[in-house]
Amino acid sequence: MDRTRQFRAKWGYVTRRVPAGVPVSIGPQSRPSRAGDFVVARVTRVGSNDRLENGHGRLAQLYEGNLVIGAAGPALVDERSREAGSVCLLTQGGLLGQVSSTDDVWDDPTQLELIGPLVDESLRPLSCESFARPLPPSASPSLGTVVVLGTDRRAGKTKAAVSIVRGWAAAGLDVGAGKPTGHASGDERWAYVDGCAAEVVDYVDFGMPTTHGYPLERLSRVTLGMRDALAATGVAVVVLELDGRLSGVETSSLLPSLRQIADSVVLAAHDGEAAVAGARQLRAAGLPLRAVTGTIATSAVTERLTAEQTGVPVLTAAELAQGAAVRLLAPRTVSS
Image 1 (cartoon, rainbow, N blue to C red):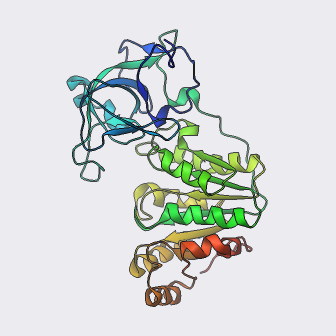
Image 2 (spheres, rainbow, N blue to C red; image 1 turned 45 degrees about the horizontal axis):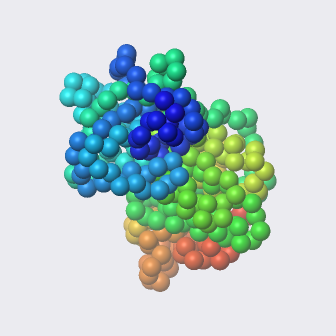
Image 3 (cartoon, helix red, strand yellow; image 1 turned 30 degrees about the vertical axis):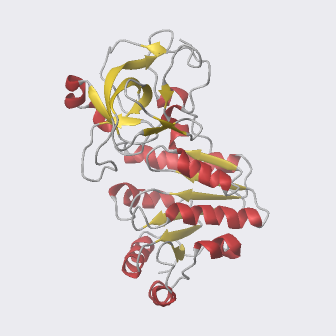
C-alpha cells in the first residue's frame, strides 16, 4: 500500500526516515518483534498521552480506532505483549511497549492493540534499521566538539545545548548538533534547528527509536559516528547532548568514549551539590569540564559557591547564547 494514499494511519516520529511513497502493508506475524521493528497497532483506549508526534514533529490528536505506525521498544518483545496482543504508547514519538517501571513518563498511557508488522512488497519486516544511514569515516570539526551532560533529566541540558548553538551561530559559525541518547522525539531536533544549527542528527538516523536497551558498544559507535557525520558536512563546531543522568548506567558507560571526541564538556546541574559531584565524576573520567549551567544558574550565591567548589564558571543560558559559548572553544585542558 502507498503510505500517503491507501494506508490511512498516523505515522510516529520514529518512522521519519521512511521515504514517502514506499510500498508497505501489514504483514503476518512471522517472527517475534525485535527492538526497532515497525509495527501497526490500533488505539483501543486514549490515555494521558493522547497525541502522536509525526515525522515532521507535529503532534497529532489520537482517537480510539486510529491506526498507529510505531516502533517496538525493548519491552515489546516480552511474552506479556505477544500473548496479550496489547501495548502502550510509551513516547509521543511512537515507541510502543509495556510500561516497565515507575520511571515511565505516563501514569495512564494510551493503550493499543497490535495488528501486525509493517512489511515491504516482499513481506520483509521493516524497521528503523532498514532506513538507517551508515556510520561514516572518522572526521573532526575544525573548531572542536562540546558535549553537554546533566546531573538529572530536568537539569536544563537541552536549553544549554540550544544556547550554545545560538552563541556559535551568532558568532558566524556553522554549527552541527546531535542527540546521541534518549527516546525519539522531534522536540530537541527542532529546538536545535530553531537555534540556527546548520546540521542536526540523532539516533533515529542511525537505526534506533530509543537508545534504552541497546548494547553500550553500539551506543558508543553511534555517538562517535554522530560527531563524524556532522563534521563531514563541513560544520566548524559540534555540540552533542546526552539524555539522562550523568550517574545513570547509559551515560556513565559512555564517558570513556567521550574522551575521544570531547574538546569541552558543559555540565547542566539542578543544585550545587549535584554540580560538585558531577564535576568530580567527569574529572575522574578524564573529561575536560569547562562550565556548569542549567537550573542551578538562578541564584547569584549558589553560582558563586558552585564556581568556587568546581573550579569552573557557572554560566546562564543567556550568557552562553550571548558569547560565552565561543570561549568553550579554547584549547582543550583537563583539570586534575
